[in-house]
Amino acid sequence: MSKKLVAFFSVSGVTARVARELAAVESADCFEITPAAPYTKEDLDYTNRQSRCTLEMSDLNCRPAITGCVENMADYSVVFVGFPIWWGREPSVVDTFLTAYDFTGKKIVPFCTSGGSGIGTTAERIRSLVGEGACVEAGLRMGGEVSEEELKIWAAGLKL
Image (cartoon, rainbow, N blue to C red):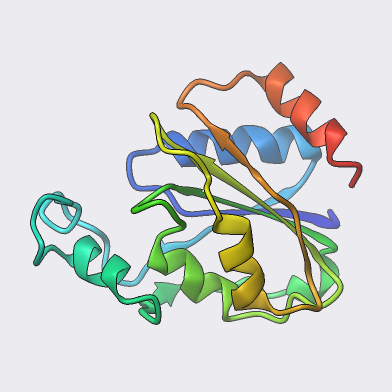
């Protein structure tokens, strides 16, 4: 079994593609963070102040339910966490994942996909969610098109 896990949340499939490519490059296991209630097009309408994602992202304590779990989290020393950037940070459903496990002694490496927004202070926010016992890397923002070679170079630079 791998000591590395790539956990990811994806709506459009972009983050899922990058996550699966990263898992292959790193010989890591893969886990999809799946909301219990899938997001609809209406839920994702960021221009609507009453849409589900707008309401969730407005509440920093929001923890939407997810399905499934990582049965053997204790076996992993490195956890890559991938997501699209919403409102300048990780989606609330990712926070549900991050607060569901004990990451003490683990290295967390966030990566996000975005057409334009940067990763911002996401690493600091993740650090506040998982506690001081985990090492949270700065992470990387990737566009929708990232090559296997680019993933290899990035991962090699992490010294995992």
